[in-house]
Length: 325
Ligand code: UDP
Ligand code: MG
Image (cartoon, rainbow, N blue to C red; front, side, top):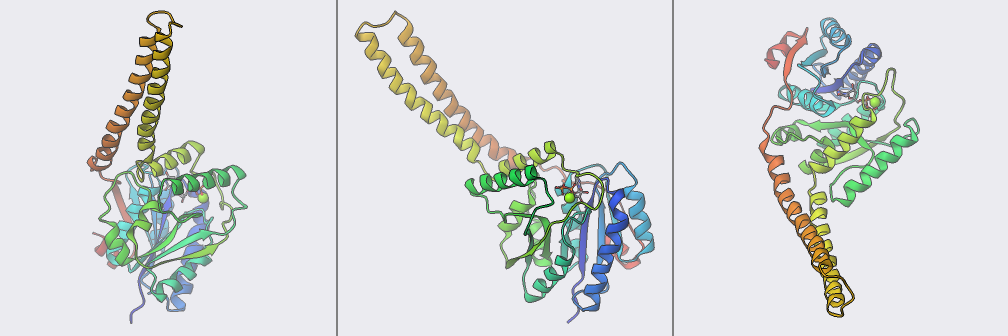
C-alpha cells in the first residue's frame, strides 16, 4: 500500500513572529512521520495567509520557494479563522488523503499529530485533538470556554468539549464536508454532524510561541454567538415561549383586574389599560418569536456568498502546483 499523502493546514493571520519557528517544527513532524512510513514523502505543510497586514505572506513565499514540502495560499482579505481553515482544507482535498489543521502559534502539541496519524492508520476518519489541561490559558478564557460548552450542550449541539480546530480529517470526510455550504461557519459543530469513525487524542495546550492572540474578546464573543445561532434556533424558540408565558400571566392579571373592576375598587380606564398592555405585549412577543423562527431559517439558507476568495498560491513543487490549478 502506498503511504497516504497528508497536508497540514495552518491558518496564519499576522503571524510573522511565530512562522520562523513553526515551519521548521512542522517540517520535522512531517519528516519523522515519513521516516516511520506513516505518510508519503509527498506530504506538505500548507500555510494559509488570512489577509495578514504584516510580513506573513512574504515569509510564506520564501518558505515555499525554499522547501518543496511547504506551500502557500493567500486569501484576498481577512476572512477569519474558520474560513481560512476551510480554504486550506478545500484546496488540499484534491491531492491529500488526510488533512490536519493546526494553529500557527503551535499552542497545540505537535507530537499529537503523530498520534493522529497512527489513529488514521487504525481506520479512524476523524481524529479530534482534545486539550487535557488548559493551565496556560487565562482563567477568564477557561471559564468563558466552559460556559460556552455548557450553553451549546443545553441547546442540543453535539460538540467535543475542549477541542479547538486541531484535528485530522480523512479524504472521505472532506469529500462529504464540501457539501456543507453554509455561510455561518462553525467547524466544531459541523464536523460531528458528518459522522464517520472518530476518536480523540489528548494533549497539553501550551503557550503561544510569540505575538498576541488573534482572538480578542470581541472576536471570541462573535464566534460564540455565531456558533450558537448557526446551530440552534433555541434562542428564538425561547422568545416564543416567553411570549406564551407573558400572555398567560397577562390573562390571569386581566381576570384579577376584571374582578377589581366589578367589585368597584378601581378608577375607570385602569382595567382596559392594564388588559391591553399585558395581552398585546404578550401576543406581540409570540408573533416576533414566530416570525423570528422563520427569518432565522431563511437567513441560514439564502446567503450563498463565497466563504473565501483565493488571491494567489505559491509552491516550488511543480507537480503540486499543477494539481492545484
Ligand atoms: N487566525 C486567522 N484569522 C483570523 C484570526 C486568527 O487565520 O482572523 C489564525 C491565527 O493566525 C492562528 C489561529 O487562527 O493560527 C488561532 O488564533 P490564535 O492563536 O490567536 O487564537 P487563540 O489561541 O488565542 O484562541
Ligand atoms: Mg493560539
